[in-house]
Amino acid sequence: MGINSERDVTANLQIGPTDQGMVRLYIEADGVEVPMDFEPEEAEEIAEEIRAAARAARGVKPKK
Image (cartoon, rainbow, N blue to C red; front, top):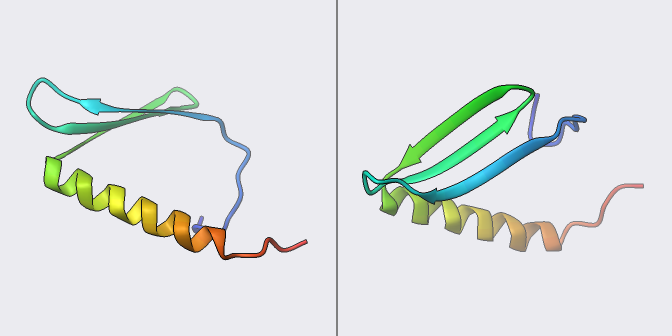
């Protein structure tokens, strides 16, 4: 499955700090739980990648 492959899956995403000073992305879908912990600096890099992707997505014309 690639970035452009569509799937009909519902998932929940939670983002927040842990008591260990990490940033956790917690994903739950179809009974599978995926906690991903990042150093604050890594989380800031990920946030910038998300912002860059959002900017790029604004310029894409959806295929019909």
